[in-house]
Image (cartoon, rainbow, N blue to C red):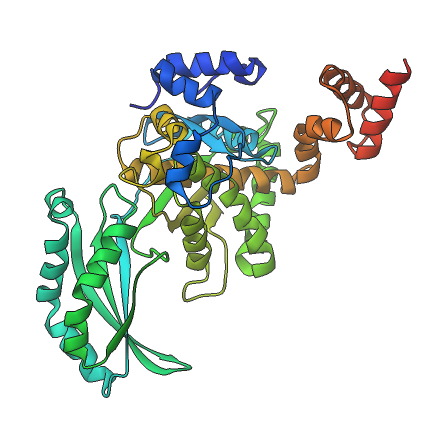
Length: 430
């Protein structure tokens, strides 16, 4: 189950060990799960089972975004990411939509597409017709492969056929549409596609080449929306100021919606939240990234993954729609103890829950970037949170970092490497 309350006042002020203890209490984590954070290195044996030619392991920070309410439930969301300001921005924006109950999801069923490529068809239209005439037979052949998936309400639901023109000539492409339930689905879909390939070949009179899942999961969409009042969009609670911020956010969104050069960076900011959660929970984040960006260009010019508008009351209304091929069955989530702990922190029981959490975080992250760009600019806040990294890069020792940070902050100067180095020289000279 999700936590009772995701609003953790002063959480950032606690030490790392105190944060772990606090989360363990809130989410009911076991000592073993907490230890998966504290001793974050994956064992060499486990690493060697996951991929080939293992020589070691590589660590990234795990941060926790707070303040998220999704469909009436509170969530604490794990991020595995190296970039400063990401976790803070998502947490900040999540806090600003709570007067309307937080985020609301409306996901579609977890349908993945398996593709079967057929070449050398003498009459592509006749091949297409022949395959479709055997649709029920093909669906049954697919479902005979995975009766457990069918038992839980999943399995192959439909067969579609397309004819495409390529540099090699026309190709007939058969799609199997598979409800993967709580699995990401690659193994099930690929096995089904390979199983029916001989029958497809016989029906089409052509030659089957590729039999593979598509990561453009247009039928498996995460859809989340939220409403932000002018008061919530203002740091001071001033409605007039908040309305001006909302206007700036909408204009920034309109820029991204119209221009692929801006949309690329705009959507990268959304993936700043989605991919870190995918990594934290043992998901195939490359597939998720690929599917999300492809969807933004699917049958249209590349554009924004989110939509922002103002309602009749002057509130900012946001929504996001993107493919979300995630799973809690199989994959790294069943092997990696850290991923298991992060899923336990979320308190989720289904792939649908994980998908909506990731989409909500992506939308919050997007708003954080748009709001910063529309007001003071994104760099000031980013550099403030990046300050300690800069101080460390300048060669400061552990005991010098806080002193240098205090000097730089109190100076009021722009945060640059030059100001950091000057502050470091000051304390060393003293």
